[in-house]
Length: 451
Image (cartoon, rainbow, N blue to C red; front, side):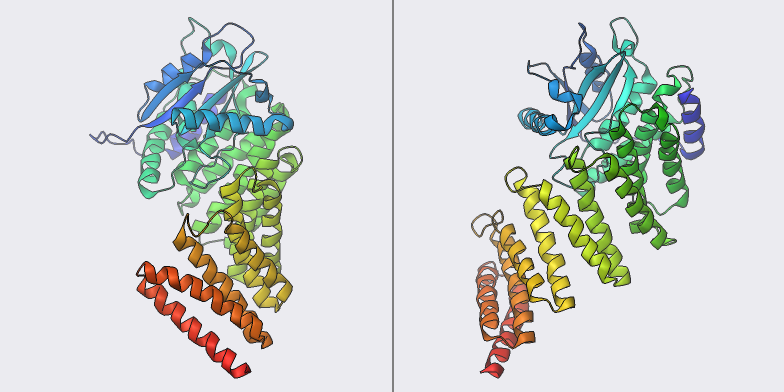
């Protein structure tokens, strides 16, 4: 049975039990939406009640009536799902939302975090990640199994974004305690083998969320084993998107290893690229575009880091291609903030590629991307960030003007540099003013040399 395997795996890896302390983590908000169920049930309320007893969670139950047909995970309704979930997260001020949907005799749970496809923050979960539990587990009069509840608890903690150091430390603290609890579970008959791939996937997510920045080969092997065990049981997976999610997490695992483990670095890069691309076969741009685009964004970062280590210009081109793929999906109209971030990254990549290849056309594309970024990062809204973009555009014009001995381009560079200088001076940023003044002087000297 599933939990025999889980117990044996985690007992070997959990290490010492977390010592008792007086520390109380800052609670964060979770909302459980009334489940889409075709029978009279308070299943969502049961899970909300269970989670409310868990450390660091403040759980509310959301039972306002609305059409939940988008929970069938079909591609045509995905944006409705994301949009409605974000609306509820905004309305309730919550960090994580839990959706529930009945499929026959099973309940499927999915987890949505705030701005899930728009921001980073060390959450490895996709909205498509699904955990199944028998529907009778949450029927009235049936005691909800603690072992299953602890996996859901771990999923919620893993889903929470942790953009700053304090929240990341707290998240790891809670996950360590959850892993310790899971290592002591002894509920071998609670789930049949049909639930194996989904349980393994979420155990892998929980452990990856805890150990992603470790350099310990043992942790890497444990997480890899969990996801690979899920894949070995892929014949039990009813929807190919679930297999795509598992491959995505293997890509994330190798991606993290490439960042944090010094040995076999190139092998980790290659493994991450292979698994991410496998994931995209199941999470295609036409059927599941948001996951596809998010993976493309990660692939772009991966290729860029590979270029920095190898100076292989093809890796830089691949990085640009993958970011262009993400750009097609995360549009200005639907995801303005994320689109702006992509434009800034594109500007940076294209400016490097244009300089290395001496291509004015590519450099012009870099400038266009930076100007796109300024549609969101305006001078009025964020003057410092706007000024830094002006400085970057000025640097591209300077590079082209110096190379081609082009007076007009050098004058463009001066105009952008002076725009940035005005902001830096008003904000009393002495170091930035010093650097920019040097660039202005160099640009003027080149102009005089042409004249």
